[in-house]
Image (tube, rainbow, N blue to C red; front, side):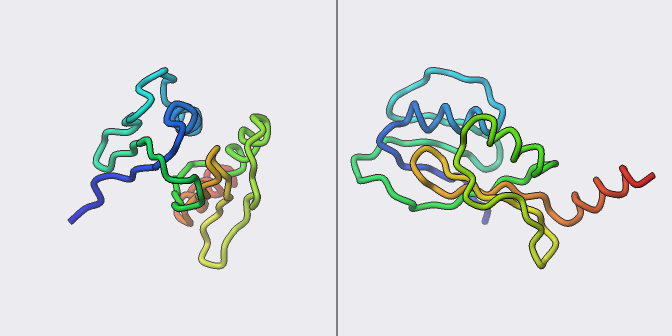
Amino acid sequence: MKIGEVCLLTQDVKRLSAFYRWLLGLPQEDGDAVHQTLLAEETMLTVLHTDAPEGQNICLAFTVADVDAQYRRLLAAGVTVPQPPATQPWGARNLCLLDPDGNRVYLRMLPQLAEKDSSSTAG
C-alpha cells in the first residue's frame, strides 16, 4: 500500500494553491476555486475547499537539496519561519515554515544529501 494523496482543506483554494505552487516551483495558474491538483505524480498534492474553520490540522515535509538556500528565499518573500534551519540529532537539516493557513511545513535535507553536498564542496 502506498500513500496516494495528501489533501489540504482550506477556505481559500486559490490563495493556498498559489503559495504551494510558488514554494514547489510549479507554474502559477489561476485555477479552480474549489479543487486544484498541484502534483499528480505517485503521491498527489491537492487543495480542496471546506467550510470548516481554518486551523493547524496538517504538517507536511518536502525534501530539498539546500535548506539554507530555501531559508533565504522564504525570508525574502516574507514567509513566516518559526524554526530556522537546524541540524537534528539524527542528521537531517530542516526548517519549519507556516503556509497561509498556518499549517506547519518542513523543508528538510536528509543526512545522505547533506553528506553528499559537503563532500562535493570539500574537494
